Length: 287
Picture (cartoon, rainbow, N blue to C red):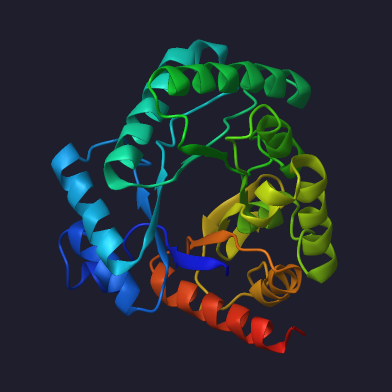
């Protein structure tokens, strides 16, 4: 088993030649990549027929699928439970139609609350999600709470891991660009990545740790707030984090995460560069 790499949504070079996501799986496979995260961030607008066809195209192309649920989800707001449940159920339905195995969800904003209070509210919200997912017969689809990039958002590494302890069907989405941004550049390099991956394994056990979900891109941040915007690997300005030491650490451990690139418009190109670096690290690992 090896790590999988692919884009979040459709990159600029794809959109110049294709008008529909139906073409995305084969295009991604021809690019030498392994997976695709279909984007429902602005709402779940894909119909069943289209979703089923994307899933079939992905199966034929050997592309693993995941879904990004709407950005509007806020587990830390007790008044949003019904809306959160609706967004996640709709996303899980799309995952079912496509044959996707994972749905990525945002954790929410603090809204003036302490981090502990917001996390406790989010845990209650997550339990509600787990209940409605099971009632709908969709509990074979993993939910992936994501680490967030802004300091005033719920979703640092420890908060996401605590959410994931609620159920074995919760898999962390480790967005290393977000963690880099909210730490103001501190969470970067081999020592930091090793520490974070050790922490995931300690909290969730080896099985979920080695198959974690991930987002990666270079991020520009501001000192006061954390994440400002996503960048590309070719942008000047010294944006981080650095992929090479993380690739080396994943290869050294023999882990097989799903790594989705969220670069701003060059997702497939940068995912391809990430896969090449990772495979070079595999080649140099002793067997």
